Length: 437
Ligand code: DOR
Ligand code: ZN
Ligand code: ZN
Image (cartoon, rainbow, N blue to C red; front, side, top):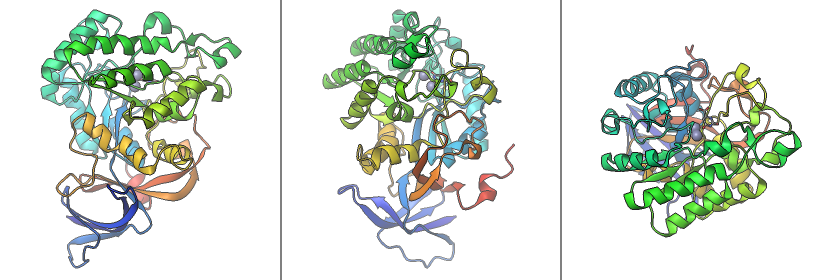
């Protein structure tokens, strides 16, 4: 099985200019990249990519695929199809499933289902504590042997400092990163939006920024002597960025991710109390949003991750106070960020791509994220000119819960290739809306 991709534009690694290139894929690997490859092999399927941008396959280190346990919200099959449509070839899935991904059995089940679905490479996280209850550590060595790439209790914060310290020691011993959902319950419990302008206007209970940053600061202190790789999930507050920046300046192994929604929205943008704008951590102030962009630009924040969190329409219709936290992100992340950060001159295309490909691979030690001969053939072809309104009805995810419906954006992924196989082709609806349940 050979594929010859002709005339696609890639970023020149030295100049960051777009240059035209041909790519030969043989089996699951990139065999050759050159300015001109001859079309003389009858076994090679030739795909013309003239005028299209070719990126390394996008990587999302934070998604919720809900399987096992919450298949009404999402399955691994529907989630990986949404990933492929969004241009993602590798996704890391969170362990707040039911049962929680705290055992070798659940890890094996997820990997088997992902293998079957085949639309994206799924890397599972294991839980830090049994059932994510914060009481008893999981068997991290066994989880690692089963294939988890990190440990996290995402969905909840680890309340006990002692438990977190022990978790870091154990994770360090077995060589896994600690990936933290930072949330102090004594400050956050009962809140539904950021403790700011919007909360006061509608008399809603707020979640203050310190609910996050207290954990970030605590964990950085705990990790300092242990030397574990500590990664902050969905960073949202100015003070958290400051703490990560300071830790990095001392050479500590601390990394952080930010979501597209925290980069593009703040609490003042919420039009009315509607749970499509409800997520955890919440949309914060304009000042926080500016600090996130600053942190992303200066490298304090390493990567962009969606926190793709599908819920059913009925659940999200329960109102700001009662609905579950979370919005979907896989199918809108790239065009939103390209339109609102790159086209507005906040980030260059090269910077945005780096935060969604090479950098996540680098910090988590994954052999993906760059276009190079001999590496797995993971590529995302993007039409940077195509402009279209976001329409949740077209999502391949089961989740429709996005605050970005109707936003007119440019830069849609049109062809996604993972391990040499086409996993999304906008031009081929048979493939995209096929025999899926
Ligand atoms: O918004 C969120 N949704 N934040 C979380 O921490 C959990 C996630 C979910 O699982 O729905
Ligand atoms: Zn979280
Ligand atoms: Zn999450």
